Amino acid sequence: MSTTEKSNRVTEFGSYDTRGHWKPPYPVNFSPLFEWPLKPKAIFKWLFGYPGFIWPVHILYVLLAFVTVVYFQPAIENCKNLEFGWIGLMLLRNFILIMIVFVGLHLVLYTFRLHGDERKYNPSFQEETKRQFLFGKQPLDNAFRTLAFGLPIWTAYEVLYVWAAANGRVPYMTFQEHPFWFVAWFFLIPFFLESHFYFIHRLIHWGPLFKYVHSVHHLNPNPGPLSGLAMHPVEHILYFSATLIYFIIPSNPVHFFYHIQILALGAALGHTGFEGPLFNGKLVAGDYFHYLHHKYVTCNFGTNTIPWDKWLGVYYNGEGDYRPGKKVVTPDTKGT
Image (cartoon, rainbow, N blue to C red; front, top):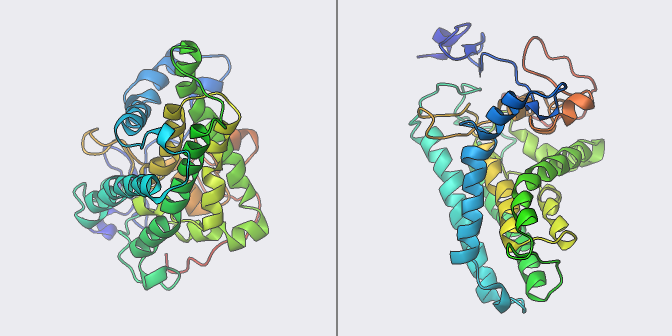
């Protein structure tokens, strides 16, 4: 169906505007965790429902972290010296993860279009040639920035942690010693991660940092999976810096890899440009809350778990005309 045919059309789930842009049939809102009075049923459903906060995404990240540590991570005791062998294996592992998640999602949703264009926020499939992108193509630009900068900086944080752990320079925790805190960390990490992301994100929207650093990421008002880590190297350093907390708080390598893989791989899932769950619920991806930030730049800096945006007056729920509260420098995205 053409964009013209879809304009101003209401479907079974969502609607299209005059330009063929799709939006869900409800305003984006925050989790019930911080509502008052508390709503236990709503909180329970948000935590344990499908798709919910825990299942499937965070459960899969926990499993991936355990699999990584047990099968795909060089033994930490063998990483006391910075050597190409074990560092190269970590770099290769992360490259393969990028191929599976980032490139895999792009192939499924954009190259082969196996989901069609249903629930796609922006009708464009990033096929246009535009001068603001390296090589003139958005997917090529995004892939280059992810592999050339995102991959090595992500891996560098892992190497730093593993080397420090091998040399006894990070506080360590085991399940046998602290079973409660070992499990509790998996619930607490996402909240720390999201708070760190919010305030770092607000920082890089400050004039000079936005102009010279964060504007690179905002060249993608119509993001796709490859856009998730398409950043300036300085932003990669700030983005992954959330994992430096493991140099202060007692934890386990499983917690560290759980945290950093959410940051790395979650960037692709949160930038698909589609609303999940997709394929009859088989693929949970997409983030309309964050898409609105890419579209309008000056709203929704965080996530819809902790209402930092609402508390600090920069929240937009997607309903009605958007009225920015503050003018900021914006990147050159003409023709998007």
